[in-house]
Length: 485
Image 1 (cartoon, rainbow, N blue to C red):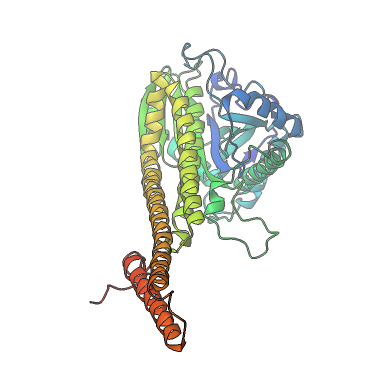
Image 2 (cartoon, rainbow, N blue to C red):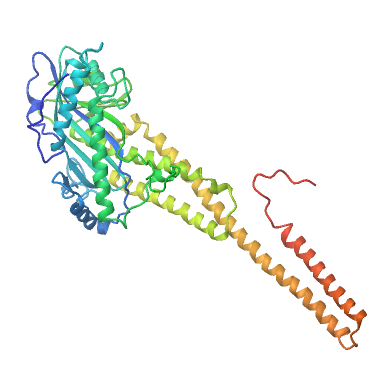
């Protein structure tokens, strides 16, 4: 597999300049594609943000993020939320920072060269007939604790059909070890993700410690044996890499999209092309001169942010539900704290979903149709339903904790009333003694009589208290068997 340096990449934009190269005629010895390698990872630093202070938070992060590659300004569309114009004036804020990766293109070029050398003697020579050049790289950091990476490549395939080219590219970005070992290109993208997550995390801790929230995965990870060792929350680890192949063809857009698409995919017509959203990779076949790929790629990036966030929430809620405290006895203060904690989890999930839903509702109908196609193919509904079911269980847990707290208060009030009842009976007994025996001259017999009466009153009141407030109101230990008659 050949590679060329990315010296002609635009250092300021994360999206490639498609105005020239896609319109160039295909080489006689190969087919030219643009490939966007997209992927998501967790930053481990979700923020509690407010719309009115979002700009201030972004500027504070901008002062802490080192290097000209980072920027926090101009990340929102300000000429209408609809792709065709109109909609709201600007989109709701979700992306809080962006790292442009023009300085990282040599890493990718070196990884491609390493791939060529490592796989030169392999049995599968399809990848060797691909010549690739990194064009641009960008990482969008979402305030919800996720990030999406997009790396664009100019790929020329020689002597292979479209399906073989797509499978070869997928093999190049495979995160797991394959027949040829780990892919150097995937390893380079992983190092970039780790580096971006680390830099962003340091900036958040330095500039926005009060807005920093606990990562969802921190609830699903057991504590480390050494307190100084941070928990492995998988920040910066790529969850997947998904290529999007862009082919500019003069005609036969739909048949070409079918050839380039994976086995499981969904087709939707675009203005100037066809988009095949698929499992493993996706494809856009556009007419020469159009930029039909812009909207599908942008919505795919947004979908990965959704998917990564829901995956993290689902695993975090599983960690919350599997905690041992739900099956243990707790004090009134602990019960109230558990109910508040569960409600805080619920409110945080609903806040994130509300923001994402508002962002989607601002899209036009054409963009929503593309989004629904991506979500249907990726089976996003299964992940969303899993989160909904866990939220329902959390709601029942909160209700149960409130009921337990109410029962605890009732039992404690009963205990107080029972003690007062005992004191009342003893007091009445002492008063009766004073009334009937108090005027007599005390003697040995009268002392024993007085003591016996008081002891009897105390015993009877204690038995009454036990029968009324202990035996009938005390809950049995969890896990105990059925009562025996």
